[in-house]
Image (cartoon, rainbow, N blue to C red; front, top):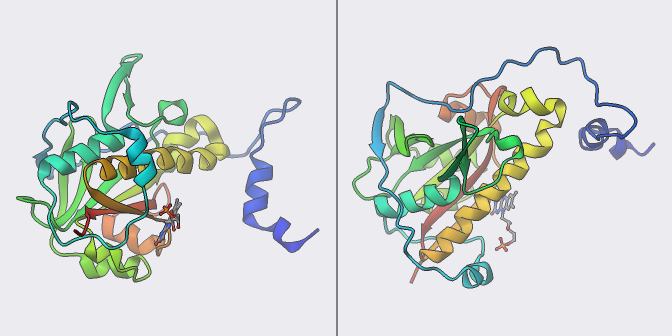
Length: 247
Ligand SMILES: Cc1cc2nc3c(=O)[nH]c(=O)nc-3n(C[C@H](O)[C@H](O)[C@H](O)COP(=O)(O)O)c2cc1C
C-alpha cells in the first residue's frame, strides 16, 4: 500500500464511512455533552445593535465580487457594521423544538459545534481586545482587553493581514458537541458547518464594502492559548480577517 494511504487523512475518511451492511462502530464510550452554548457570565458585555435587514444588497453582485482580500484599510468598522457581520455569520432566524436556535448558516443536526471569538482591533467605541460572541443574547463578552496584533499575527505564521484587519473572527471546534451525535464522523461535519458560516461573512463583507480573508494556516496551540481554551475538547479551527476596502 502506498505510504500516503497509511496516513491520518486516508485513515480518517475510510474509518468514518457509513456502510449499508454494518453500522459504524467505535470504542469511544459515553461522550458527555458540553451543552449547546458557551457563556462567560463574569465578563463585561457589549450588546450588539440589531441588524438592519432592510438594506438591499444584490446577491449576484456579492458572489461575483467575492475575493479573499488581504490588504484591508486602516479605517475602523462601526459597531453596527460589526453587528451586521455577526448576524450574517450566526444570526438566529428561527426556533425549532424549543431549544434549537436555527441560524443564518446550516449545521449538521442543528448542533452548531463551534464557538466564535473576535480579536477587535479597530471598531469605533469598542476597546481593543479578545471577545466571545454570545449567540443567544447577540452580545460580545470581553475576555481580555489590549493590543494583541503581534501575538495574533505571529500565531498565524506571520501572515500580515492579521495586523491590518479591523477584526479577526476566530472559530473553535466544540468537538464533543458534535461527537455526542456523530461520534468519530463529527470531524467531517465541523469544518463543513464553518465553511457555510465563513462564506456568509465573505458575502456580507462584500455587500458592505469590506474585504475578508479566510485563514486556516496557523499554530493551533498559540491560538488556543490566546483564547484560553484547552486545545482538545475545544480547539481553534478557522479564522477570517475583515476590514474596510482601500479606496
Ligand atoms: C479553508 C481555507 C483556508 C485558507 N487559508 C488561507 C490562509 O491561511 N492564508 C491565506 O492567505 N489565504 C487563505 N485562504 C484563502 C485562499 O487562498 C483563497 O480562497 C484562494 O486563493 C482563492 O481565492 P479567492 O478566495 O480570492 O477566490 C484560505 C481559504 C480557505 C477556504
